[in-house]
Length: 477
Image (cartoon, rainbow, N blue to C red; front, side, top):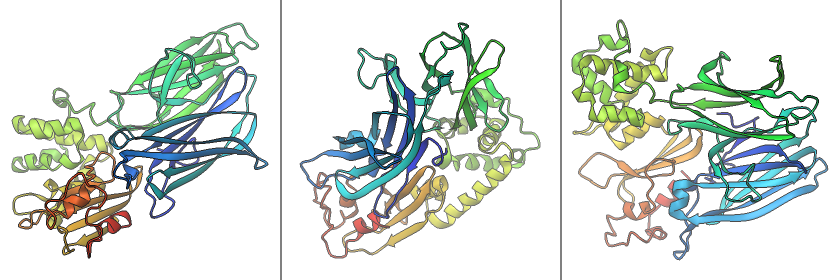
């Protein structure tokens, strides 16, 4: 996924005390009356702070957007606040769309995002863009969509009779089952009365070949503005790097205009149905050499990095299928991740599993079965570890700080040992989307000396007690 030198930008942390994670995008369109841009913003809810006011249950942001021309004159300006209930924001995040009418020229857009509950949690970003419009057939920018539906009535943010929620990313993980998009075709009524053809396809980035049946051809009428809304089913598109190719051609198959948007697909499910594994050839592969005594354990240790469908097979079916089918599953698992050398991918992972046994195993659990082992295998080793085994009032705890996990920056995990008779640390809280989020983590961490504290009090959990540094270390590891 490209974040720089393209239309899609990831707003990364500018200061060590800032933790806002956001995606920002600009798309250019043309109407009968004028040119305009749309700005799309998505903020991950669990990177915003809770209010220190116990009467407030909102999370939110104050946003400032303004546009300067080449002479540093402000030609567009918006300042506004978006807030919702904390639970909603943590789960759904914040999505924002703004529209600016603008003339032809070169511009810079500035955006500043402020956490309404923490004045130091600020992100800033700027992006240059230009506006021009041809009288020849051409396209608007292509907008990826999270969802869309027929609008009951037109408003200032509908387009072509549709209400649309933008998708501010070009990474389509296993949770996506379709690629939906919108764009507009301009000026097909000029110079010809003959209808043109529109080719829409998904191409493999490295070979420029159309990926299977991902190809559509459509006749385009003669209009000054013609909207296109379309989607491709991604369930059978394998993991890889692709491009969405949109091309306008004439009757002689000559191109008139073309747009390309790169995207990345991760699909771990399309070959992981048991009824498909029988076709997987494993003769003379690394799995054919594994002893029958080891195959089950080798499959179980994949759990930390498995997809949902793979986990279903590991957890519920692996013990009830034949030895051959287990080997086919193991081979397919690593082939999906490294088609060129699945054995090398497996050997590297197996070495990491051995590390987790040395670092995190207990008397009753393998290293990969522990919370620390799972995080280590899924995301790699943390960049820093803060170890506090003897802090007053708190259970022993560790804070793991990752500078980067995938597309996310500055993510933290806190593990603690509530059972002092065990050697195992368990997850208490994390700021990473999709991992365990516990707004009462401070209260739970200090419960050994304050068992009667209310779990509803999330704002003053022993921070004032002597020697209590958990909040400081977690905020600034």
